[in-house]
Image (cartoon, rainbow, N blue to C red; front, side, top):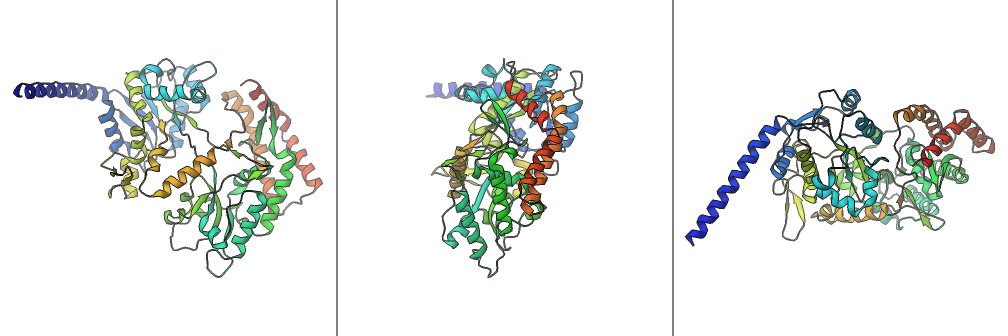
Length: 502
């Protein structure tokens, strides 16, 4: 027995020696390895953030963090980088576009990650092998991989949320077609679902032409931010489709009937956001990635995801973000230890690693109960402290994966219900146009055209819906004529060439 204890003690001492050696090596490395990227310093301070300490504990790799206080400051810095600059070792939360990644590879600023992924990123590599479309999404046409992705099987969408409490109050089911939606909105307007005794409800809250164009799916219309979509091998312009006029006429009818928010073309998120739980509950249906962005958390539980409406027996909706977000993590040509840097990032492609980014550390920020559910600790319930000091996730994506299965195990069932609804919603979302990458020269060519044409389309939608312009043959003919005057023919030829070369 004594011999066994001595052997165990010796083994422990050997492990401790190894740990101390790793710590010494990492301490030395910490002086050399620099991680740079953007995060608003008003909300988060990387220098004192425990996320990086937790990552060191898990991977044995540490960085000196160089934080840029705003996305604008970071973008300006990225634009100045050359191969001869004093580069950090890695870019984190980098927001690199495909074009930026390709340029930085060509100019010797970052390295091609393709040769390293299988050996240095086993967690990510397993995901990519199981999902070849993910691998294709991060790979340039020549086979190079400039950066690591964020992967979300239930990606962020501009979701339609409907007030379930309002539906229950008016005794109706969630609508499934455009006609049914009109009836529901009329009930929200007329039947006082918030019980104030006045018609103060806002049946459908929207933010400009951007949100309204998402409603076009009820007429079989979806397009990307350039108002285009691929019909097989042909690029088409959504505002010149036959159903576009029907859709705009329908929106005009909604507005005239008081079913659309009267300030929808002039408001902004700050003005329409409700923070006071004691305010009147007015919103029947809203567009938002998360309804919690617009109403207090206690109200958000009353909203359900409204599944895309059916058109000719089929439901389809614009995929806004896609499952793969490129550009979250890149390794520069001046990196002192590429394998260590990638090992650090690869941990974030495990559930435990990604949970660390969004929920912090187990037994510090959350606890898992015996039934498998989890809940936040008291300290993590302090939202400011939790955001500033404990979690690293923000609107600027980290490398890693979404952890919907973990989130579904939250102690309150509402989170699982919403996750299941969003999963079903995403199943009918499609990308209007294949993934593409533009060179800087192509960007310079298309940007002025898009600025003119895109602005004109949105402005004219507003004029028609608000009743400033008539819905007549002459008006739509003038619309088409103006589009060609602004360069639509060249615009469409540009995108056709992009599609032909994918």
